[in-house]
Each structure stands twice: as C-alpha cells, then as structure tokens.
Length: 239
Image (cartoon, rainbow, N blue to C red; front, side, top):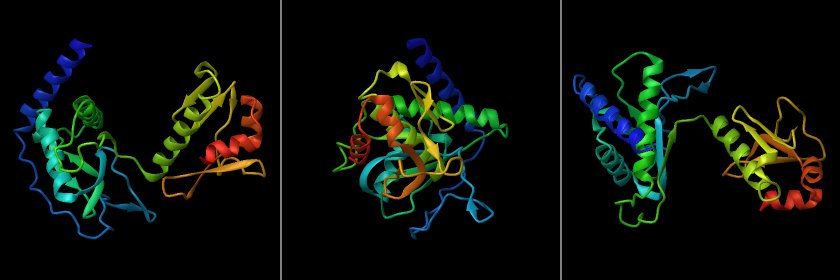
C-alpha cells in the first residue's frame, strides 16, 4: 500500500511539472442563474455530460466563494494546483462543485488516467479531512467522476437495493453489475422500465427529490428470495 501511495504522489508531482508548460485558462466567473451548467453542447436537446470533469461535494449549503476556495485548497494539498482549470458552482449556496481539469494531452486514455489519479489523490486526502469553512467542520466531503442524472439514478438504485438486501442475506448470495443489473440467489431483481414493464407487484424507486427514476423491483420476488412478506419489503424500502 505504501509503495502504491508513493508512486501515486510521484505521478501527481510529475503531472504538476508537465502542466507548468501550459498556461491555465483564466478563471471564468460562474453564472449567477440556477440554470448555469457545465454543458458545452447538446445533442437532440439532451445535455452532453463531460465525464472527464470531477465533482467534489458534501457541504451543507456552503457559500459559493467558500466552496470554491476550499476546492483550490484541496488541489494545493495534493500538489496538483496546475491541473485545476475551472470550477463551476451554479448557485449562491451549494452542496457540491464541478471541476474541469487542465489536460495537456489529447489522448482520451491519458486524460482518463489523469482524472483517476486526481480523484484517488483527493479521496485519500479527504479520508480524515476537516473542512476549513466555518460551520462546515462536520461535513464529510467526497469526490467522484462527473455523471449524468440517469447514471446517478442507476447507481443509487443498485447500491440502495444491494445494501438493503445485505440486511437480510449474506453478501455471497448477492451479485452486482454496474451496467444496471443486480442478482439475489442468481435471480435478477432490479429492472428498468424500458426493458421490462412494471406490474402490480412492482415498486418504483425514487431519486433524492422523490421522483420516480424508471428503476423498479418486484416486491413479491424479493419477498420470496429473502423470506419476507411483500408488504414488509415495500415498507422497508419506503423507509
């Protein structure tokens, strides 16, 4: 583990050195409107998500200026400030910030490697990190790759049902595929409305706003697999 961390730190320092040969773009003021976005273009009216960006979050309605300052501090702490190209925070107060990295190589694989390296370095820094923003000291900050709304909802559905099932069954009987499939006792138990039509036994899953996501489970099937009544399955998943 120590050797891997030393190698990671060396790579971040190397990226920092190489980045000095390219002048970062000047900081762009973020939009004041809640409709502000990191989207550069659209396809068929649907936003194109830049998944080479990263997202840092966990604040409890921090001021935009404070969150931006802390993002810059975090990049300083991992010795990767030259990789920080732009920060987008569309609201006056926020729970997260999107970060655009400065890439000096047009190769997608190299850009992904730099993104992953940066995310890993930030994750390790955040393990025991205490926010420097007054009133945010108890916030547990996190970092992840930028994802579309559909992908976030898929991951939420997978993780929530898996974690709930683990309360009733050993994890050895649960298999997960991040493409959107979940098995319990070798039976697929998570479905998407475009591939399978819900019925009377279906329970639609919701996002953090309480809206249906299109992902659902069959409460009768889950009850049979976990030795629970359908009503108990539905009640527990609603809590």
